[in-house]
Image (cartoon, rainbow, N blue to C red; front, side):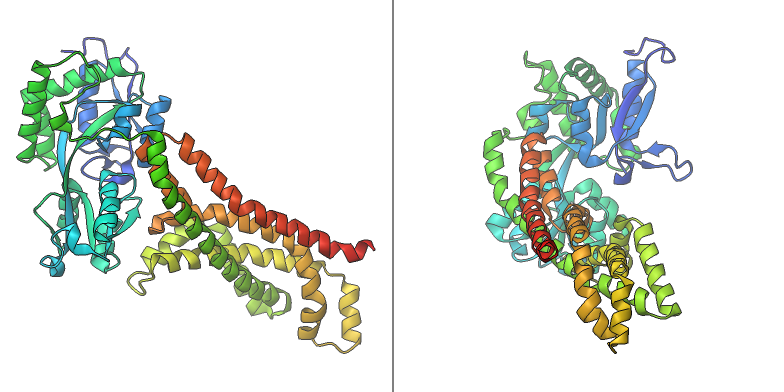
Amino acid sequence: MVGSVDAQQAPSFRWAGDAEGGAPYVEADAQHPDRVVGLDVEIAQLIATELGRTAEFVQIAFMSLDQSAARGDFDIALDGIEDTPARRASLAVTVPYYEFREVLTVRAADAARFRSLSELRGHRVATLGGTTAYELLLAAEREHGVQPISYDDDVHPYSDLLNGRVDAVLLDNVIAERSMRKMPGLVTQPDAVAVGHYVGVLGPTRSDLRDRIDDILRAAMTDGRLEAILRRWLVWNDDQPKLHARLLEARADATTDTNAAAPADARHVPSAPAVWTMTWQYVPSLFWAAAMTLVLSCLAMALAVGVGAVIAIGRVYGGRVLRALFTAYVEVMRGTPILLQLFVIYYGLASVVRLPAFVAALIGLGLNYAAYESEIYRGALEAVPRGQLEAARVLGFTDWQTLRLIRAPQALRFALAPMTNDFVAMLKDSSLVSVLTVMELTKQTQIFATNLGSWVVPGVLCAALYLAMSLPLAQLARRLEERWKAPDAS
């Protein structure tokens, strides 16, 4: 037994995953929500026991697991993590413990039409961002003209497939089989698009611990404990004995290269491209995503300004009931998370109206920011000196004439600076719409960073693009303020 140290005295074995990812990897226990269950949970417990330590789960968002591993936030990450060149270049990676197939899932009615990616030209194909499947779709976009759609989770791609928002899903066979059990009406094509492997990832300096974990995993393959775990979670198939045999054979013929955790034929992992080569490949996508962010933000801001102005005028000039309704709207929109509002608009209303992702994002951002804009405009309207309003009334101006000719022009001057701040804030908040599959700048940067294995270059490029969009607007606002103040100074 590897774990000869007293587990009570040894430090806990901190392993990370994302419980939001769900079964069969890691998910909250239905009977005890404070605990997690899944095949990776049991593998982590097996490793901890062999090390003589107590397993301690650390919740980390799936897309942040690599970066957290590099920081040393935990001992190992286990959560259906794919073996990729970027991970092997920047982290300590264990031997593969599961072989999966990238498979295509379609609606049952389309099973005869869409049997491969080449038959999906012009159609929307969904997957998880930052995965091997996403890279395959990008290649298929260039070769076959498919439209890749990136999601942040592995549940909504299949529900959107059923709803007709996408035409196919490309993901691991484990995820596809789970979704077909839950959602009748889906069919997974039998031919694999590609083959991959699940691994554990550790910080780049943890090669000693990685080697010990490799020995534990190989021992579990030999004595059947790993097979028992995989069978318990209904993911054991004919691919696994072949993988285990290759790994054990490779161990017997092991070379002195300690980081070659599995032979090339077992991993099917190509060499990682150079940093600047990959950067050059992703730059066009970053510019396209920046354009998407700017267009979305401009349209959403226009909606926010229009709705916000109506609300502000209604609260200043309206009756008691109208003021109460508008006040309730403002408080609800400001008092609930914008992410929740986006989910409700896109997913919650899907049974009533199926909005395209871009339209849902536009409406969600616009209506949320309308609440904040209305408060700016209301304050600006009320900042106009009452003497001017009384003079207008004495001169026989109607409320509409007073608003249009006297109050609104002055209020616009007062509101300009905070409006500019809100637009810059919206540029940044637009990153939230990636949950609706809109490929905006931050989401594209996150995918780039995941595949590159570093946030340095992607982060710098992303920041530069955001600054390029926001700084000219701020400069324009300052010039307008100076211009409008000039008559007062003369």
